[in-house]
Image 1: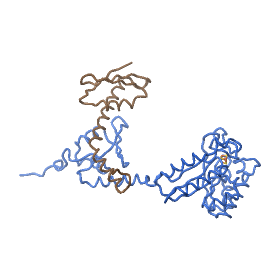
Image 2 (image 1 turned 60 degrees about the vertical axis):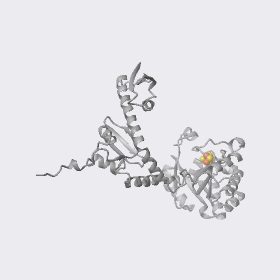
Image 3 (image 1 turned 180 degrees about the vertical axis):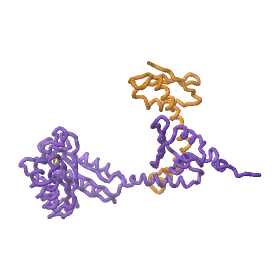
Image 4 (image 1 turned 180 degrees about the horizontal axis):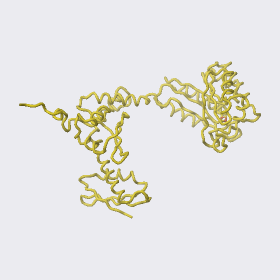
Amino acid sequence: MVKSVNFDSKVYSLDVIKKAAYRFSDSYSFEFEIIKNKIVCKIKEINKNPELSFDEFVDIFKNHVLDYDLRGKIFKETSDVRNLILSHTFSKTKLQDG
Amino acid sequence: MAKFKDLNSFSNKKNIYNLLPFNFDQIDNDIYLATNFVGEHILIKKSDLGRFVNKELTSTSNIYKELKSKHFLYENKNDIAIDLLALKKRTKLNFLKEFTGLHIMVTSLRCEHSCPYCQVSRANTNSNKNIYDMSHDTAIKSLELIFQSPNNNIKIEFQGGEPLLNFEIIKFIVNHSEKIKGTKNVQYVIATNLAMINHEILEFAKINNIFFSTSLDGPESLHNKNRPRKGNNSYQKTIEGIEKIRESIGYDKISALMTTTKDSLSKSKEIIDEYIENGFSGIFFKTTFSVRICNKNKIL
Ligand code: SF4
């Protein structure tokens, strides 16, 4: 069985959706297509999970997309301070550039 | 009449705090585990996680205080939290400075013992040396790799099979390593069953301050049962070897460890006595690993 889930490309990046997809790639296969402002994600079941219906999985997948989006936001917002911390960490070692 | 403002009016408004790097994952329906790179963690409700990232938490809430104390947020750019995090991270990564000190070089896979618990793909003594012994080429490349370690104290341990069956390469490695070691301190250890020890080896070890490590599994009958060899004299060879090393190089140049098998379990007293009689002040217990022929021989 194949199901299509649409994401608004102004809300989610393809990258974020792909990250969520990788997480489930042992049991589902994913195909992406960008149509206008939509990212169409076609999901196919490879290994049937008797404890999880396909619809339930789609809901879980959508939540994971949301989580990856949040991670991306945190990563972006903290990248300056991450570099600052790392440069403090490695100061006085010989492991830095320049 | 003017009244006191309520508590919430003194709490931080939105956006007053900044996020510190962290990651999270769902562990239960509504519960997320958030971790940061200094190893702190926090269990947080899904709704709180969203509010936290969107800067909607107030500084008086318990979750805010916990997030702050565990370095998931800081309040302004000059906050000491960043220095503190850097310090914690530096402490956590301190091992990198002393990166990989111990290097094991397997000089031969051949051995004249046939211990059932042996973990290596051991070959007989008359097997093809070109296949089972370390070549000069491999030795040189291995040393190049070893000396890439930033650690100032390097230990090279020769293992086998029986490493002394390829003593030529041990000599080559020690001589070459002494040439290229620069300012590093290098210590050499030969892990051997001692059956092959001879005058030439002892002399070389003395000159180069080489240590020996051997196996002593317990009293003669147990040791010989665990460690068969032609002549059934492994125990005798080991004890003689220990004495020779102590006499010609130094008392502390040899250490021993025992491998525990099911035959050892009822003989703990005898094993300890054996170690004391032979002048060892401690015992290092080595358990058998369930690998290779050790598995096949069902000696566990
Ligand atoms: S002496 Fe060591 S290498 Fe040789 S058979 Fe015994 S355990 Fe294996």
